[in-house]
Amino acid sequence: MRIALRAAALAAAAPVLAVAAESATYSVKELAPEAALKAAQAALASCRAASFQVTVAVVDRAGQVRVLLRDRFAGPHTIDAATRKAWTAATTRTATSELARITRPGEAMSALRDVPRVVALAGGLPIEGGGSFLGGIGVSGAPGGEADEGCAKAGLAAISDDLEF
Image 1 (cartoon, helix red, strand yellow):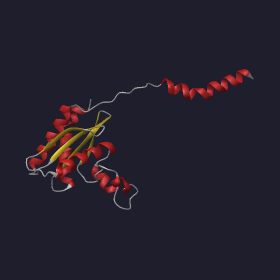
Image 2 (cartoon, one colour):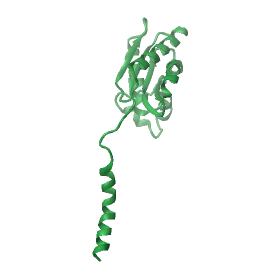
Image 3 (cartoon, one colour):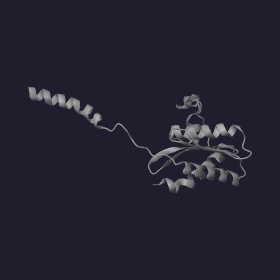
Image 4 (tube, helix red, strand yellow):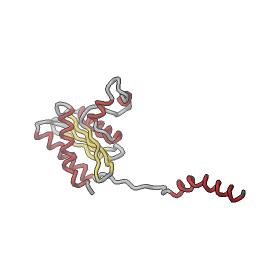
C-alpha cells in the first residue's frame, strides 16, 4: 500500500517537477538597427520612385520604434500613421490590410479597432525571418493603403536575404 501511495504521489508531482526544470530565461532574436534602417530606406526609395512622399516607421518585436524616416513633403499626420501601422503589424503579427478586412463592422474581430494605437489601414507588415518574429514596418502618405503596402513590401525585400540566417 505504501509503495502505491508513493508512486501516486510521484506521478502527481511529475508535472510540477517538469515545470520547475524549465529555464527561467529565454533568448530572442532582435532586428539590428542597420537592418531596420536598410528596410526603411528601401521603402522610402520605392515610394519616391513612384513620386509618393511618405513616412516609414520600423519597430522591433515589442512595437518600439527603431527607425522613423519622413520624406521632405510627407504630411505631418504620416508620422503617427506610419508608426501606428508598424506597431499594429508587430503587435498583432498581421498585415494591417488583413486587419482592415477582418475588423470591419459586423466581423468577429471588429472590436479590435477600439484598442488604442491599433490602426486598420493597409501599409503595415510584420517582419519575420529565419523562423523568428522581429518587428513591423509601416508606411503612410502614398495615395491609398495598397500603395503604402507596396512600399513596405519593397522595404522587406531589401532585407529578406539578411534575415534568412
